[in-house]
Image 1: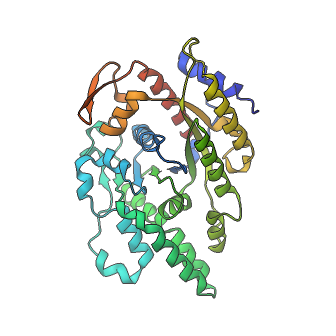
Image 2: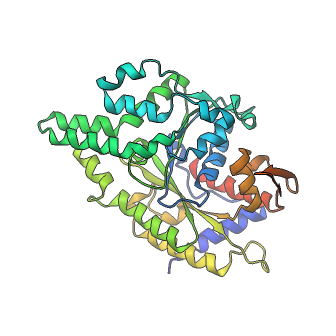
Image 3: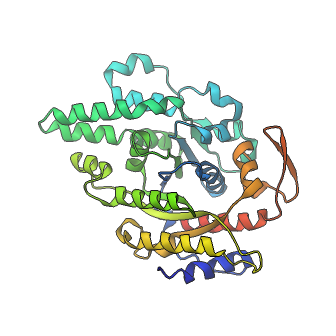
Length: 357
């Protein structure tokens, strides 16, 4: 089994409030991050929201929602999410469909919305914007791959350029927005399936953040994700090669979520979680070249089960950094109390962010 002592030592220092050195110092080399995994229901969007809040402390940030469930958009736009037009889906169709779509999209600007106008928790942060998601993204994979296959079947020298233009469509949308908004960082929340907009998010990304729950299904999803990024025969790499595109993202962080801890020993992870952590690191060690350094264990962070704090943050759009222990909030007509472990969660999130910054 993999040696995870370095991760556990850092975790103890984090929770003890001791000083520690972040094992990574290259996070600032990357501008565009994608939160990605191939399994739903693990708190990915709540994690995206809280990392977004941390980015906006120091950076003008563009937040992009390419998940058709659009939960990220709801946290940032609140009630305005239902009237948010245009969406990232509209912008992608404008790029994918070309001239045939132009007349329908003439009035599409502006695409981004200022976050603090709809989520007051972002008052006092750097000016940041969001491109809203859309439920219609469920339909997008069919549109994208129909166009890709049509262009690739054309033959001739132009097919490579045409395929590349489609694959870079989200990247070009983001570049246009960041130039206009003077954005310094970009965070994309993606869906738990690869096809469609998540594929384009990987094409736009400099670095990936992969949340992995400590359970069997999530470990399987982690290995699938690493294989997709690594194997030349994967859909991601096959289309990238067809377009003559060399760039592909590196993994900057793997966030192991829902770690349990030993109630009898302060700051110690429980035995079941330890087993899954060891296996996750072992899987990562088989794909060293996918990481932004040659030491995958340095890219791991450990996160507790955020319990009621996570539910409150992910339902009400309140960053965990702003939650106060024992304070009550109403979620879906139920009163939930912020658990006293919230200070622990804040320290864990701080460490994850250090890997990115």
